Length: 279
Length: 279
Image (cartoon, rainbow over all chains, first blue to last red; front, side, top):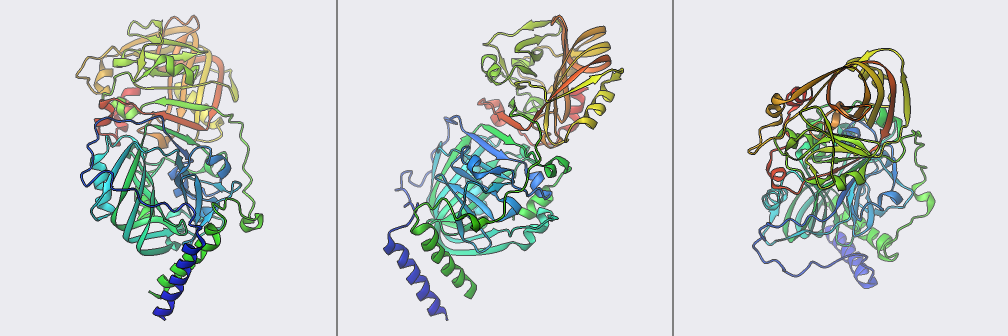
């Protein structure tokens, strides 16, 4: 059975290679930065804006109806993460292409008339680059980046192209009304474990003071190099890769017009639920 | 292991079917995502944006250096409140004119090269109007407005033109480095009491979930009808007046480039200090 599996995998893999249609698959850049990370002294933050639909608090409290179309969302950025109407899967945008990763783990293209209840996107322009020459896990990666960022009080878009010996991701199934709370919805999540996979982490680091508005700290999604599979990142072991950070000093939040958002009791301390949902 | 195999097969298969041969495959047949986007209740919120410089948390923690010029600030709105470099007085913008109310209680014009460490402005367009025909104090006014606003979860610009039998306002003197915390700086505030004065309240109501970012609830400044005097509002008795509310669903926050902002420890619970500072 195992051999048979391997055969199908190889056959399909070679079909991709032979067809020559590897989509956006990009090879990793050369070792431009060597092993030592550059010290961050000058901050070239540019004029980047992190654009967000709705608030995390609202999502935690079941406000899942899509309120902004992807046709509109993509005018605000080519890079980002989020979810879909009815909480149907994980959203990832990279190099201007938007993907919907459903509970089968597969990354589907997103059409303009689809809508999102919660998303954060930006026009990604790297301000700082870091060569990750040594293996790091998720926690070590976050600590490394934190120690190299100019301040904990700004927003950062984070991209890592790398090879992972292990990566654990999830996706959440479409929810039906009456919507459960997010903490209950994620209990039905599908979890995917990748081994020896190459791909891209896409996400943000947001400051502690936006708690209630977004996820404080890192929030990362993943997509394979062939842009075929991925999910919301739960854990990883990175072998090596290249990280790029877009320092973002402007935050634009657009709130829903929907009745659900209007009526929910926001501003509560839901930090415990955030941790359950993100891990 | 068997599941993992199956997943890889599915992922690779989809890579061929979906991304492989259609290039970036942006649109899918309509029936693929059959569910129509949910109906969204229309609210007459306009396209207003509340533009903010820095965060309240930073101001509470002595980040008083001006970081945005008034020449730039006024491109983001004709209406708003804030403070000045070194915390020198109360800022009020009304009908496109910007004023600096110093500790003598007098409203001075603001020049473009002056700067602000914290301000919130918008282009004011009334969405709702309320006739205030009966006397109300500050608390009653807030309760009245709250009961007539569509949601506690949006931002509102609030303007009241009225006659006040009593109004208590304050202004804060310029601070010298090393800057004290805001809670200490306001202990040196100058307080003005007006009787039988006509004028305009200018300010915002922000939602509970932006605590740390702005002042949750109402934050109002005042200027007399002759635009000669005013301050940060501490209390009032309104005889009668007209309130106008600009419902604002978009929030744009621009963070400072300065070292002070970069280094301060934000994200702490400073609600007690906010209450001391505002009252």
